[in-house]
Amino acid sequence: DIQMTQSPSSVSASVGDRVTITCRASLGINSYLAWYQQKPGKAPNLLIYSASSLQTGVPSRFSGSGSGTDFTLTISSLQPEDFATYYCLQASSFPFTFGPGTKVDIK
Amino acid sequence: EVQLLESGGGLVQPGGSLRLSCAASGFTFSNYAMGWVRQAPGKGLEWLSAISGTGSRTYYADSVRGRFTISRDNSNNTLYLQMNSLRAEDTAVYSCAKVMVRGVINYFDYWGQGTLVTVSS
Image 1 (tube, rainbow over the protein chains, first blue to last red):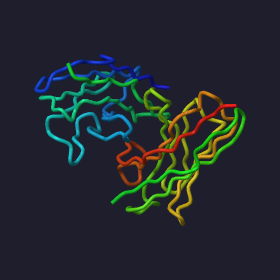
Image 2 (image 1 turned 60 degrees about the vertical axis):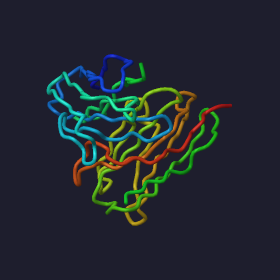
Image 3 (image 1 turned 90 degrees about the horizontal axis):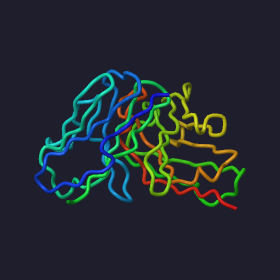
Image 4 (image 1 turned 90 degrees about the vertical axis):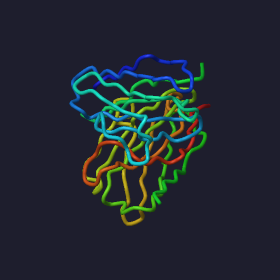
């Protein structure tokens, strides 16, 4: 199975900050990677798919990049509603696997 | 509007069984693969299983393969997860999810709110 790691596990940031989260796959997954945002008690929300494609309705301050084994999610200017936990998901080979998550909280 | 509503969760003893259901609406159910994801209390997301639109292809995480079975009834727009030989570590909120692209199995774009399964004596 492909293992996914994320760094950092948590980050404290302020409104307006640029935040970058990294996801690494144990094997190459081309661009078969998605990013999800989850708020407490809520279902995850798809932000980015195929590593860099912005899901419909997601603000343009979110962007994704990478291919192969290394990927990043960037929030260009953090907004109050962005404080949440972010997960990557590899969809290259079964079983699909999530990263352990990165919690973004208020500094 | 896509809606996914899970049911069937509850308290079960170790070694017991439970069947979860997910009622889908707002899209042509048979055109899309579906899946199950769980989240243990205070923990991250775990991908569990997926099934193709016709039901002919199924996939499982190592942690549940051989114990859980995913299935679907396209005539009733319902997804199922049969869970056998349950363990304490299966305690989690179980959510069904819809795959975003017709005809393939990849990313989930819609999720239900989940149903809680507690495995305890």
